[in-house]
Image (cartoon, rainbow, N blue to C red; front, side, top):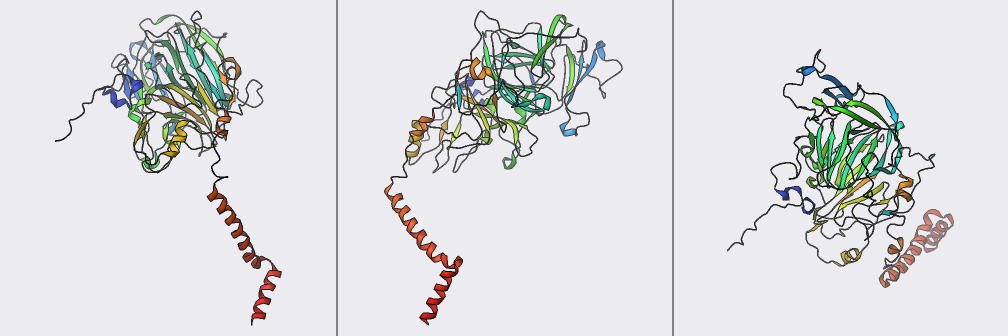
Length: 516
């Protein structure tokens, strides 16, 4: 008699799923996401609040419907090849050019964009480092995204159009009548704690822990706490002179990793109140200034183009792994990549480490000890994560610089070597860890080194690895064979001497002559 079928029940907590499909959703968004999105990576989308607003068969008509203004945002060079040409046309109530001028402002944020060796305010971290959860704002101090942005590390400089920076954001208040515009580079936001309600010029995005959002250079946005959320924290990776792309799949074929259809783009949305005093805070070369205007920056009635913010749910990642032997390189976990000027080495990779099957046979399945040429920053979004020590917690981070020797070590590491036969198993359940990997050397800000008050520059204590036993030196079999190898080498050296030593050759020939 066949065994009864096990009923499959939908999961309800996204932080506990093995994959997004466990939620058995009919929609591409989580249940509490209030917004509608368009699908498809890198498409030239179009959207309109009022149907029929977009001009037909042209971009800049003599008169736009409803008296709207045409405004363009150009991301790439005008003459860039078609595949690399990025721009969006906007049809809005008032043009962005209508404002009262720029002025400098003060902020409680810790922003640094110059990561060159000549800058005395940034330094390398030669050792491993680990941070406890980065501090959230004090309850009595209202901190919005403008004041709650803190640079941790980076490499390069936005003026050189080459490099990147890492940030943590920690906020407890929503931006009110204020928008943010980063003119230095592209932001990749990754929520760790607290849901965010993000308003962009092109529409609304709801961001939750375990999701990422990319906002391109020059696009204006406002970050608010979602209803019921008291504070929020997350990570931002900014790239200069590059943009986030899907990695090539090579032999994988057309599908796998982060699939293009799972990237979601907002639909056109306008504020109900389009007048009133607004500030637009600009980050330019790491400095804040702002402009004032008497109208909302979120007044697009219609738009079309491919410079549009987007989001992606990391629980949808279609992971790949070894199905026979050996440990697969972490590159198979790349969600997005940003190219550098070296065609063989990316500027930055954004990687996912979440629940998956581990099935390799006759294999030590845990990460082996290694010295990568890349700088690696790990952050746990929820669950136990993959930190450098047992104290690693969600909301913190850990770091290994290029060619720093490292690897996992725990009781599980020792146990793994004793397993005689290991069957398929699910690993990393109920957790989500991200890694930002770069070919560049990271220089760290004062905030990261001392200001946040959470750093342990030793991270995983190297003394832990010193306790790993030397099972070779006193192994009797190894000692006997080493002695035999030494004797064999001596005999081989004597035999080979005749090929290189004339005296030995004459001795050999003399022996043959005497023998005859």
